[in-house]
Image (cartoon, rainbow, N blue to C red; front, side, top):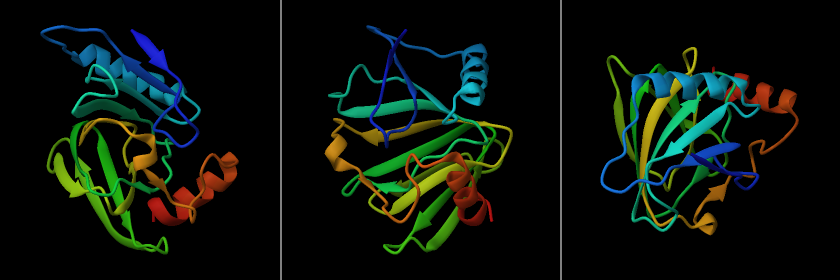
Length: 172
């Protein structure tokens, strides 16, 4: 398993890419371990990339998001994204250009596990359970200039600022 270090706005401090040829599988024990690792991660996010590299035309990632995990609101214009909840519950929050909440979409592994949306809309997500594991699918190839990061929300700010934003906007 190889790990890469992302830029300051990216998804997590840990992203695993594994070499594979004709088949790649992830079992329940690995999902549990990934979730536990996310709970120990300062940013609360760890992912396994199922695509071979950043040039792949389809990107699929198994993402573990701890309840303290935060991702700055962002958008990828001209793309669509799908989430499939494998464990726990996830709230996807959509914003207008000014950072005002337009909608909160509640997903969970039991009753509403799948959503697909236009990722050109400002959005972020938060775990509403004791950690969440989900599959994210988006078209590649990866282009870091293709993601806009909201300047009206904290980035890699001091943790108290992030916690206040999460409480006020994402968890209310």
